[in-house]
Length: 167
Image (cartoon, rainbow, N blue to C red):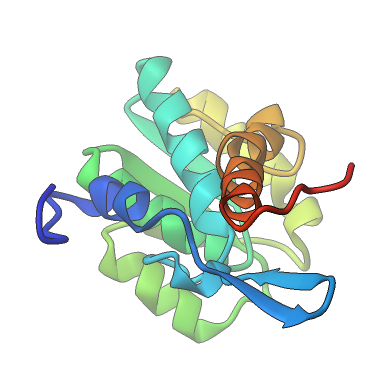
């Protein structure tokens, strides 16, 4: 990568890190995760780790239930990694997310009232199609994504100005 030209969305995501850190008070800082390029949220980080796990496991596709940002990021990442992605959106999910996720080539299915209620549909689909179900709500990669990226960035950014994060 040079002059901020990226070959794909994964390079873009990694090339945009660290996201800016902004002082908002004497001892309060904000990590500006809306600088992440796909969903403009912290969910891009989790989605990257989950999609890469599907690739490591040799799966041809992913299936997940989500109400928004994670699904959007996973759809974009699945598209650039040639994985099929099926998402079950709960009834309350916005129409905008449905459209955006479809734009990335994902199959959108109607779920039940909540993401939790929809999990049984996802599990059935996973078995029928031999897809990878990342189970974002229980997957340790969700935490690891932030330990290896977000937390590391915060430590490095604070250290660069002579401050240390208290834990």
